[in-house]
Length: 143
Image 1 (cartoon, rainbow, N blue to C red):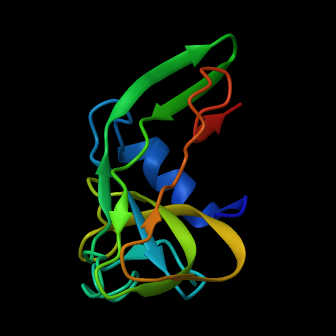
Image 2: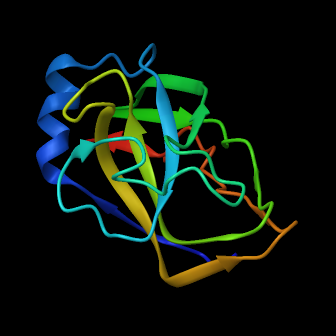
C-alpha cells in the first residue's frame, strides 16, 4: 500500500471537542471510494458496502492513549484489524470515524487519508491501515 496524506474535516472538530470523550468513545477506520463531503457517517453509504472481504462500518480501533503531551492533546489509536479480500474490493480513502458522537446515523467522520488513486485489492490480498503510534503525533492532535 502506498503512503496516504491526511485531510481533516473542520466541521467535525467542534462536535468532538464539545461532546466527545476521546478516551472512551468508540473509534473506527472505514474505507470508501468517495471523498467525504461532510462529517456525517452512515454505515454502508459513507463507506463501502459489505462485499468482497470488507464489512460496512469499518473496523473498530482501540484507544492506546489519550491525553496531554506538553501543551498538545494527542489521541493515539491502535491499528485496525487487517481486511482480507475474499473476492476483492477497491477503495481510495480510509476514514477516521468517531462512532459515539453521532452526526449521521452511525457516527462522525473527523478526517480521512487519501491514497491518491484507487487501490484495487484482489482476492486473498490484505489491507493494513498503519496509524501513527507516536505519543507526540498520534492520529488526532489539538494544539
